[in-house]
Amino acid sequence: MKLYLQVFVFLALFFSGVVADEFRDITTISLKKDEQKKILVKYDSISKLFKFNWTLYKNEGLVVHRSYDRIVAQNILYLRRKNQSFRLELRPRGADFYAAPYVLVKFKEFKYETNEAVFELFLSDKSMEISLKDLKND
Image 1 (cartoon, helix red, strand yellow):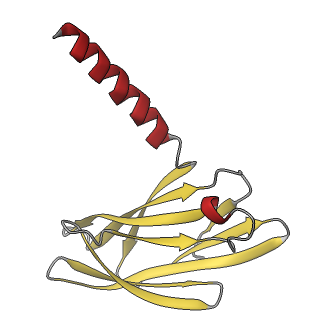
Image 2: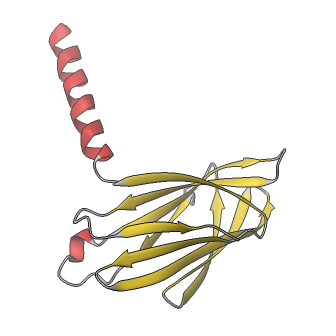
């Protein structure tokens, strides 16, 4: 029994390290209704703007509008369902077809007291070529 416990602990620690290495950066963001978040994405000599905001929270669904590289989309994110996040590829796949850098935006919680949605942004970039800069709203 002790051997099984040691093997389980070893596997749990090994796989937690593997999963933790997948994301290079994790950021938490709180947004009020119709407040827009702007993030500048840079790689090579290219700069692109990623914008997103939320407009409606109804029946535990959050309506999120996003724009990146002239592509506009809308997602409905839920806290307790499969649709908690959306994935945004930051550059064309090209030669790194299986390791394209991306941002995963996850709906973490909704604060009723302040009417704010909390998001987590996970940056996956194995080749370390992407830089993200938060553009503060002035």
